[in-house]
Image (cartoon, rainbow, N blue to C red):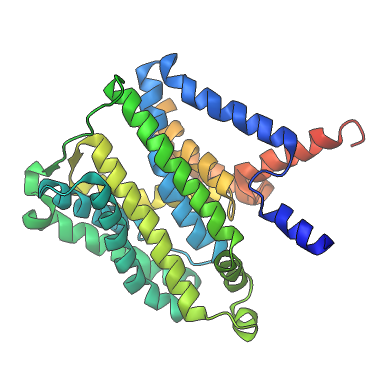
Length: 326
């Protein structure tokens, strides 16, 4: 009975009563923020919500399954342009977003096959080649990318009397929240435990009955699905798509978000997404310093705090929880 109770407690999204209070306060602040914050702040937070979806997908692949991918810009482009073509042909945006995720996910399955034979830097190079190839295809194909004019996407019509920026904020806030809950459910399920087993020791995982082929490909599919949805949401928010929005830099940005935010951590994914969006905003007049800040921060994280920003936050919580006895 004790084991069952402890397992149920482990599956709870928020275990401590005080944690529920702080989370509730944080959510209320996010809900009220658009009514008091400048439009620019609301705009930046909306982009953070959009990136949160893709970073969580990347973390499921790298942090939980141990498969390195530098081809996320390819999945972003596939998802975004699939969504763009669907809505241009009169398909509603919900179906377009799902189609974008499925299209990217199917390509993720194809790219995932090398993961059955390749590991580490070899897999990273293979996926990087895919991302660069997809970018070149869209750049050189007017039929797929819309040529120099790109694809124009009609933005969502605001509802409930909200302004356009506030409506987009709440829309993407809800989508990010749903994907966050989905991620928590995935990592708490048998599937998530299988991902972790593959990451920690794939040979031992196979011995205890984990199908390596199934779960490696599944992790690529889910990660690519998340990234494709991110591409669709980004296109819907911006109202415009063109290939140069999805260069190899986007793959690096998502990778940096995972490493700095914290591997194998949903909260870290949220922190990492905020980091990679806020740093360019804060250094808007010194854009050449952004890669420097990313690189230096990664070095500091790897040397002093391998668990990332979430690891530091977790240790701070433990410190104050045990204070003054520590």
